[in-house]
Image (tube, rainbow, N blue to C red; front, side, top):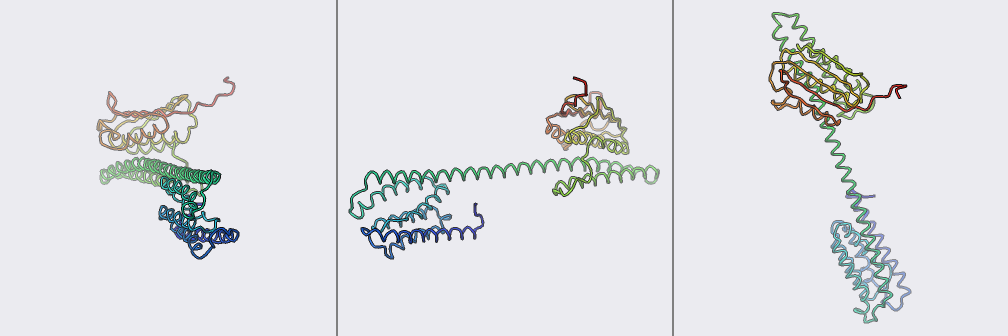
Length: 388
């Protein structure tokens, strides 16, 4: 388990240093009692075997310096002819630390220098016969194993870090997509209802004194639009807050709510007709929501820009797709839905369609007015019994 808290990490390193110091000093002192041909184990020998492990306390901060220090103290101990024993623990730990810190060249260079130094230390410093080929092969094999273990640990750690970074990147990507989705929902909810409220408020102000009855109708439409906006806004904010203790307060918006859109647009002075072709069938929630939002955004822009207009909503249920088309015969600005005004209407609708593998086209009609047409892929309809 990786220790990330600095205080706990310092405690772990201190405990490791103490354990290695006890093992090196105590173990070598016991082994030296049976090595009469070596120098007696004295205070200097104990210090040389203790200072290397003590340096391990700062091995994470100064990996190369600790590695070189452990190498020097261990080589000094061997050069003075003291008894052999478990004297390489600190050097092994510092070697692995350097490899994991990314200083592979330094680690391997000192490892090669250590092979030559420890193999010929007795011949150079003690005037004893040089090591034979058996110790030379044995030491080389041991160091190759150590290098392999260090490299294996390093590769595994790199993979773990790469996997962690990949998970973090994926989490960031999903969070970004969720923010964009929520922003799109907020835009569609607020733009539609606020547009209706704005139009009806203008009507109410205009008719307040001369035709109070019609002004009352406009205010009633404002109340209904604001209620719908608050309800949908609350649903979107629940998602943003990750409220998952229970089911949503209302089902996800879909084409079943089309009558609400039509009534809102009608109250704003738009004559809306709905035409359905094909056999309606249950839609996947994502397609149902996208179709609803496309119609909502199209009606929003009709309300904003088309003036006193007639709008026709066509829903065509095909075997492989659902076609949603909204036409108006408005005489407002020729470029609606944000095409030239720099709005988010058409880009938002196109993003919704593209996210489902569909497409959306929008633009002025040759005979006047505006058309929004989208094709959303659908799963094949269920087979009827006995149709095979």
